Image (cartoon, rainbow, N blue to C red; front, side, top):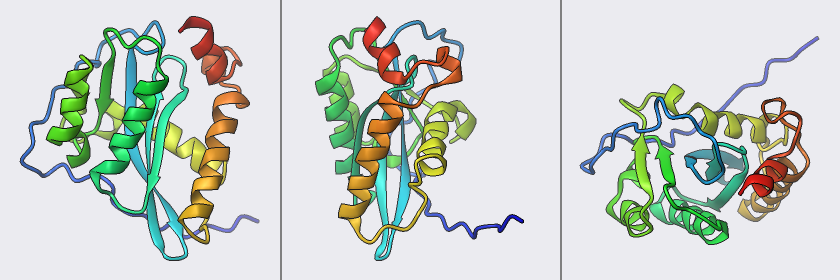
Length: 192
């Protein structure tokens, strides 16, 4: 017998804001190498004291999570830390495109200025359409369903430890059918 679990959620995207919303420039793009397109998203993680928020940046070609950060609020700083980690670890970001939803964090002047300074193209979903950011949504689901980040953690520190472990396993151990049964790390490092 299966027991249906009650799912609690937190809204992480506010696309009703004053900042400029960029067009989707990856819609018909063929992704052929690492660091060509990074997809970003924010998801929530439950703790006994409320929610904390995981900002993820995933390489679209290899499916490797290249940057992440957990913070106790939806403020911009978590997304900026995740972006800076991704940029720091990347060897070559020439002609890179950053794709995200139209959330206020990704449209903010501070975030887009970092992308522009590094000459990273900016792409966003149209009308907050989650199917246009399906890979980022899929990675969120894998981390929650397969690596148990959907449970309730005691505090943010516990959530951070579990997330670090889950991302490590996802990048280095989990085989992907779409990658011919290779890990994201294998594909990213082989062709980067």
